[in-house]
Image (tube, rainbow, N blue to C red; front, side):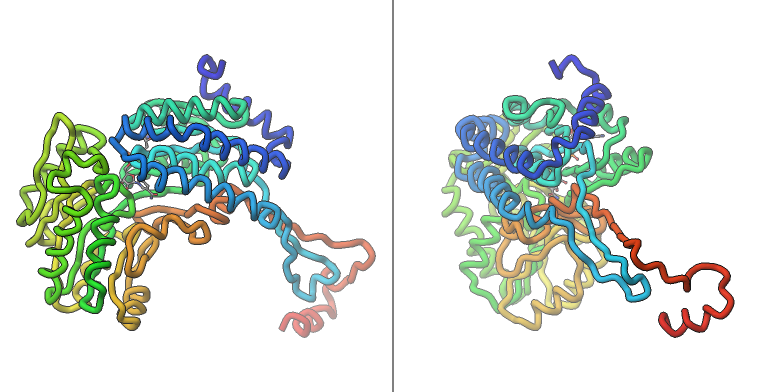
Length: 459
Ligand code: NAD
């Protein structure tokens, strides 16, 4: 039984299996991806139930944001794996004639994937798809804050994979620390920036490369040149799905003063339309994951002026969809990622100021701009830096497998999804091959009389 093994022993078994070459076989990788797909499909009801227990997540959101993503990523990997794994021929300069060059993707070995609680299934399994497609063994560490999902993932994984190939180690930060004491060939971490630093420090001791999928304050700029209804509806959706506990949720609105009141009216209208007069009774509204996060979020309610929401119930960890106007950059709610259903609103009269405010803060994971103005779109793309940008919508960029997903600066290192997941868990090995049939002497000593020739061919 894997539970009786120490972490070192689990890793040792995985290394042994990896060294047999079994996980590198392309047909083996495809078969494992198919088994994962089937198991997720068969466990749909259990996944929905676990997510309901952990977060009060509605079935619709579980299906749309946790399961569909996994199905699409597996399909995408299976469709492209033969192309991705093929060695690629590259040009070689003439002075190396007759040598030829190729790049071979190879798996890294035994990788560690640590996940958060907010999309607790998808954020652990999506990187695993990349790890399998690239031919690795893996250990998964789900978040202890979503215990039902953590247990379910452990069960699913143990049913389809042998532990020497892929296994789950459940537990809290202590379990993570024990794992981090070991040498892995890659660590893929999704979570907060503070813990990301701890992960990177631990990885550095073993020179283990890391992918850090972190968070940050993702701005949502709203210009006057918009479709107001669609803008309000798309912002309300992206902010309040999963009760704002989405890493790429619009963190705050930065709106042109001329359109602010109209926008806020419509956002209030859509909050009501989505969740009714009392969101506490809506079957579609999620709860805050823990008391600590609930206390952190309610401490922000003192900032600015609440124009809708603010109602809360600590025993249920319920916090209504809340919009706060008259917020200043110095308020507490603007000092850290909110990661909850609170939407602060700041206004601008000059877009240059808005851009300057964004640029003097940490680089966000996502940036949203609502505007039909192509010049403004181009200006924002050129003058700001963020992990991703979505124009005239929110959050959707995460669902497109052909778009690498990741942060920049404080919001993360590296990316995944689609081919990027394969790349993240692969090493691209450069191979130069020089045949025996020709061996020109110009590079060998004695050099006398050869420099002029060298200058002629390389000059
Ligand atoms: P977290 O950083 O607290 O925890 C993430 C994981 O790290 C958990 O498995 C946890 O057990 C482990 N952990 C916690 N403390 C640790 C320690 N001291 N040493 C080692 N491991 C430790 O993050 P969270 O609260 O689960 O998630 C919220 C954060 O994650 C937010 O900042 C959010 O933006 C970010 N996030 C980012 C993405 C992304 O794709 N970039 C996705 C979801 C969430």
